[in-house]
Length: 295
Image (cartoon, rainbow, N blue to C red; front, side, top):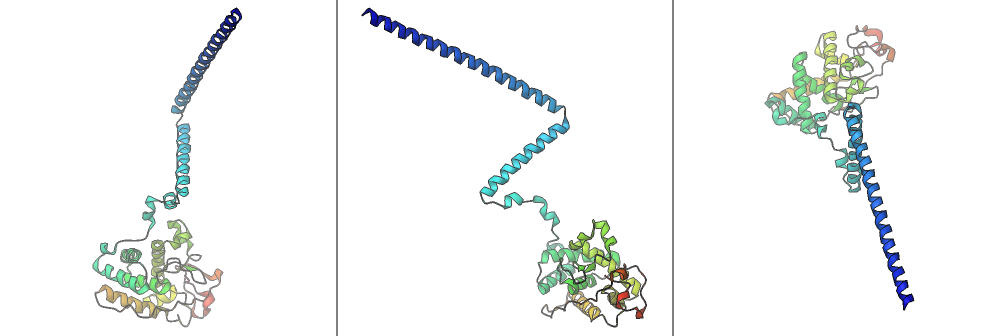
């Protein structure tokens, strides 16, 4: 009986000892945790105080944090199959060459709608080009319908058109011949910006007409046929389309189902003979390879 009591006392003592040990260990871990958190807190405060005094470091942290958040957002969007939310740009509309035709004057709106239906292009970008043709035409002293007629015959209003000899854009300006005219617009790749191509083309056209002394001959210079026997009917087609556009602008009814003029074939000119529109004209017998005014 006494042995049993002794055994029970020993068990109770062991339990008490274990309890004391566990409590001590718990208190020790708690103290260590408190101290560790305090050290971490102090470290964070020190980093924040240091960063607050270093603008460049703060900016780097902000940039990295923003990039991380954007990457997380893109990853989640792609996982959900929403590609547009990843590539969306609120400012993208500022790059669009477009305007509501209702914002145009009566004659401009009439011309824009007629071109849109005839050449099967959207009225909004055509409206912007018509507006620009009126604006730049007034500055250059050229009829805006002439400018639009050249675009119609040259490219059918395709801003990315390119001829076999390298004439590019709406008005098919030879960028390798007139690179200096694109410098103010950032370089020759601006030839594929519709409004820029229009503006440069108008300057080239104005130079050609001034050099030739008449619209008909100026168009021959523009198409690179100044020293040739024939321009292939180019000037006639341009003037014919201008007549249609002028009639539309004046409020007259013009059918839109007339055949579209065939593309103009240009004779390649030797690169060393190509000059800008301000160069002197070549003599009539010099041949196509010596045309001074080449687009």
